[in-house]
Length: 492
Image (tube, rainbow, N blue to C red; front, side, top):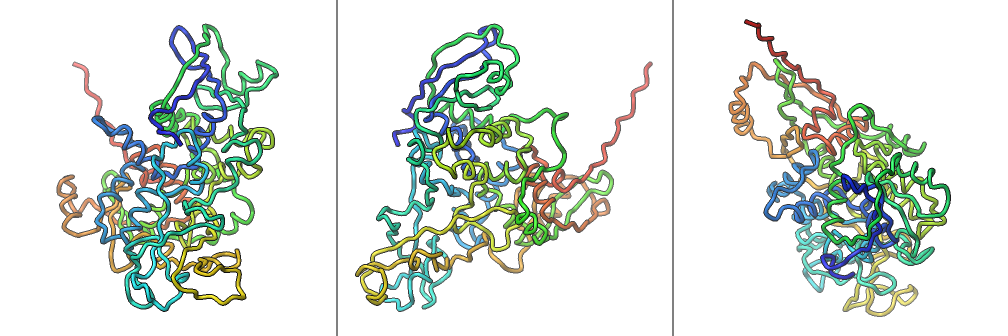
């Protein structure tokens, strides 16, 4: 991939010459691949790249409660995490489409960094490395009692250095494109509806793009660079649907197996502190399970969010882009038979999934990896070459046991956390709590504690609210503050 800052796309633009409003643009597969790749980006990555791009000398955009959730993770002391690596996973989450993203003409995620794996620091350790591998430098100790600090150069079965993304068959399947067929042309409207640029009814095509009036339209050629791509991503997360059109419930597109799994999903308990006089949420108190759930929101890809919410995220442009992928003829315009599914329901990268997930998302299959060893631990009857140790046996599901406390982010123990309405997480202490109440001038007599259970529906509501509101807990838990009416002023 070239330096993203120098890459240009040539676009044909149709805009209203009076107000300069974009009606639609015509672009090739390279540009559309970048657009569709937004759906593969984890929420934490989106917050990070927007912070980096817009934070130089000016305030970065605020994405609902996700920005404060992300910043809270960054500010939280590393001692609260299972390992330093767990914190790094949340601040720079990987995509299950890393392989495809590395081939994009512009990858807004920045310079690609291969996944790292660590084994016992003792080169003479007698324990099999395949059951003592960590993706984190400071993970728990090896079975021999020493630290997992020594980095391994891991390669996949084709000899490539592992990227941790696995690749799902794009970048050459079908018509040679990454997500779309090479040489295909597409139209994108100003509200991010995307349709193939093919011959046919002009009225129907304009209707599919949501364009009802083309008066004053003017064609022009234009070039765009990274800054325009970043503005599209920002608008994707900031353009909200009209309040009258927003559905209150989170639409769900689950299949029967997923519905059955969600019925068995766990329930988490929150102690919610409310102001008696106003019913306003002050903060919530929780144990590690709810914090792991909140932090896990940062690793969900944008397409996974739209899937969980049934294409009803309350973000107009995101919903339009997601439906565009759903409506497109994948056999003709997408690079691979599985591309549509990977965009609309992207997997969670291997090693990021909770052992007891509350959302019906799937985890990426672990790659078949090997590293070079100084000694042979296997006999000649196996398929292994001398000097090579496989981290997975015979191509079946790997037997890697990530010794990093797989499935958790927060250190387990007798600890409680305080969660603010905008999902900022801090360690719970009595002194800080009382200081906060004093700052708000709220006496203890005006505070009540309510226990609430958080299951799948509440989790979906919190996820949806986190996209658009800085009061994600209030909206997600359906807490209705009492609005005090101001007394009418008497006319003189």
